[in-house]
Length: 287
Image (cartoon, rainbow, N blue to C red):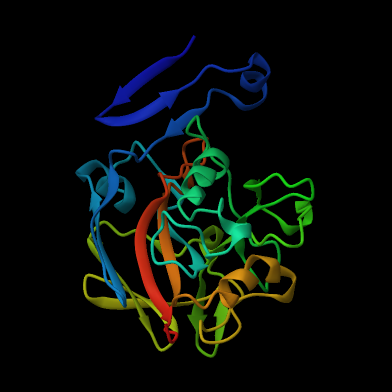
């Protein structure tokens, strides 16, 4: 029914699926970095998050091109995701009100696994639907009252007005006096083989990314603004009103990361499991 071939220690999955697929596209080769690029030693504080990126020797060879068995059109990269919340704990709702009791921050990890990473190792690509904003996906309440529904686009939302749900944002990158959604399929940082120690720090209302002690990028919000400015678009207000109005605590930005496999001599879209990094205090309020 299916074969698994191990090639020089790297997992390359070969699946036999519909005969029509073989006729049109050939045999699919699946890439997985699950054991080759991992994240560990996560150390969050109120104003910065540190973590380690562990890259195997084999993955290093693939990234720098010395392993001739694999080639990349777009190399592996990191993608960060964030949610603004009135709660500091990822296992709590995004806000302390009745409408959000079922919208737990950790729900996004399951939603990502089921809808972006994919259950069979073949995920889906993320795209900015316009040049002004880049929400990754939404968890929302339908007009029939059912909660935690998933959508990658606003166009598919049939939302119940009084419930906010969760908008999972992506970072924009500061470039001179403006913000952009970066190239290479809108990823945040293309992985280099010597990249080991990462730091995310909230500074001057931007998320600063440093690698091996050197600042590399400054990130703004999913609407291409500093985090001190408006946090959302008017059309997304249902996802933020309850958070902003919840004055029981501070405002926090919770951050996750996934390894994107890039594109090249393989046929699947690879994402690692979504890894929770921690939270930064976005705005202190009198409590």
